[in-house]
Length: 389
Image (cartoon, rainbow, N blue to C red; front, side):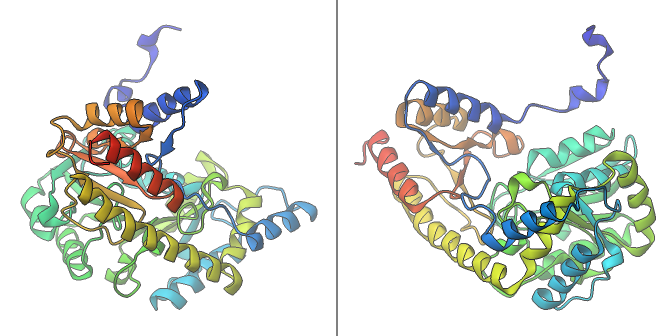
């Protein structure tokens, strides 16, 4: 095939570096090396028994056909009830679009809102796929440098400073990948207000919202019905491979998003949807909350351990299962350091390269979505690597 036939938009989409590292780690394992994976954002827990049993019942009953593009009514109602029970919010089921993972939700949001040449503001660092979805629809992700003093997040002041005639909206994540930090609730409301004044849209990725460890449960939906929220069953609900998520949109946007869903992927997996309903049962929620506490325990171990190794953790993460650690006291290039730690210590971590240029050289992302046994072994290996063991 003539590569000149490929669309020019591909020039604005870079490879996902963490996946390249994963391939390198897998090759070392094939060679017989022991590798501890702290690079991938995937819970080591899997779907609990109530969810598996619901999927089995769905398959046995033959409910394997296409569903409505917006999702089965039972699941949309269950999500709506979840917002009421956990966040005290009345979110009509009609505003909830069930999607093929959070990626499907972000695809629909960007397809509906991003016009060619328009700008979307987001913090640097950010999850790389967010800016690539914007680029896929020929928009421009404008990355705003954000350091630890702002919790690696956008602020109202940043939004007001950087908004221009090309800006149409903001794309946030709270808690964030790669930093595990959340936007303070009142600051988020102020950001929404600033965007609203400019007639723009606010998209908030809340896929780690269930894994928030500090303060009262909060959703950006409390800032107004015009806020667009993305969520997923992958993280808190431990269903990464099931490819199930949802999107909450303003009432006037529902029909446009439904039309896009009908054409882009017809519907989310029917089996995953019926299984997803069981996530909201008391029995399942109790399991997820126990697992959340285990993630908190791991965080409380790994953050001081990293500091003892010589990393700086300027902001203790309050959510997700990541630590964003400054390695500048240990090396002058985070990418080279992670390669050395992989090859010499057998510990796979992610350099800041994926998440934007501002922190690329000095930061690494540490995922603690692995067992305490693995975390302790990783720390022991890194102690020897840095000559501290």
